[in-house]
Length: 592
Image 1 (cartoon, rainbow, N blue to C red):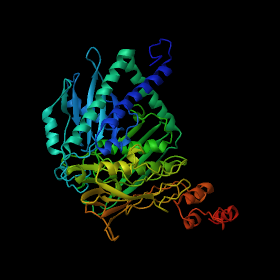
Image 2: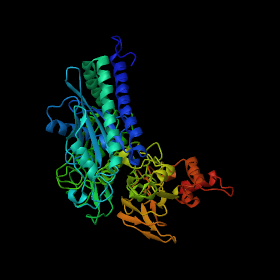
Image 3: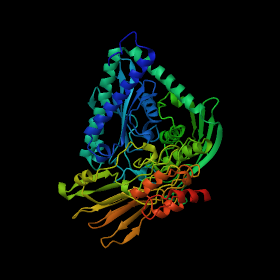
Image 4: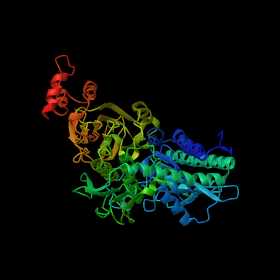
């Protein structure tokens, strides 16, 4: 990069240039994985992350990675690798997916490569975390919500396994995966994509280290962390000091008939610019797949904080993390799990029920900050489909689809992000293209649209729910497995905002008859049968009667809210020409 070698370049400019360079390397890793992966969950939905860490396991650069994957977790994974392999060397690569030692859940296969300078001194790690279409579970899904323990879950667990030595694959491990995973060719393609990503990262950092000097890169890392900490200090100092206890309840689920209420204790110390989160006052690990890992519990709380402070220019790295303390306990469903507890759904359902109370709590403590709750996850429209494709010589297929899910929360300054999917991925995963899904899998999607009057009303509203309807093509059967939340406990609003719409799932028979289904379910569909999925809407922020009239009118014209809801919830009246009657609206709003 031009200017990096100049002795006259100021430290601030050089730090900015190097930060951009590191982020661009992480993006090259991501582009490699995205463009070469075989499974739809990676090459369509983008459910993966690529990061760079220092040799002492501190998160340095993450580009557009999913926050629930990387806020905390990659550091723990690299520490685990160093624990089991103290003599790292060039050409090593490691496969890691253990939820008990840093990872998110078993479906997220992490590829990790240590990077060395010309004198064989360890300088950095690069890590690619990719959600697998199939990871060897007992049923064809990567979310086994009903699993009573890891044995019932069935996933292959790899703890810091050396998958490459001197740049050569460990074929024993490759054969193990191919013999256990339902779609071995697809897995192999995704493995090569992940390996390509980390090797690209290794090459680019080696080039950068040679270009500007490894000592300069080390100094940059230290300065970047210090700068990021100062930015976080500035952000927290703008908040008022205070404490609050908030909670959010996951719906009843297999193993937890009363659901799980996640309690979060928040303390903001504005004077010392620190935020404390305590997650210890929660139930022990439960006999289901909802339990969080150390990485996902900590990351969820972190995301809530970063959402809450509003200043999204604060770099999320090990430097800014210094101003946050999160307290966990062992054998807690929102803490540190013990083997053989199942953490199959650790990145989503209960993680969001930890994340959302943090951002709502900050909103209640500080007007103009925080967010409402994001819509709960995972409806059938984001389920895992499997079967055999008659168009492709009856070959098996397994893949998670992202066909219909919304859920964005209202904030102090914006309406909810329609396609956020869930709070933990911050909108970085993508909705599937219907056409691409129908080409890749024997699926027919008959409907997908936004549903009326399901937004969490507020000064800034949450996003409305999405409806999608799909099933197998003729001459094909299909399984759909999902682990939905939010049919009983919707996303709550903040500072007077209202809750979002609830999630629902139905089986639709060929004659049109609808049968409502439970939250966690494995559905078998025959030709002509469909699944009808409603995602959850996001909560609203602030009093709905304070919403700008133009925004209410636009939502009405888009078909997202009805005329009755505009009148009764937002206090906006229309004339006979279907336009806003401003004088009557002003009179009506004065009455509230």
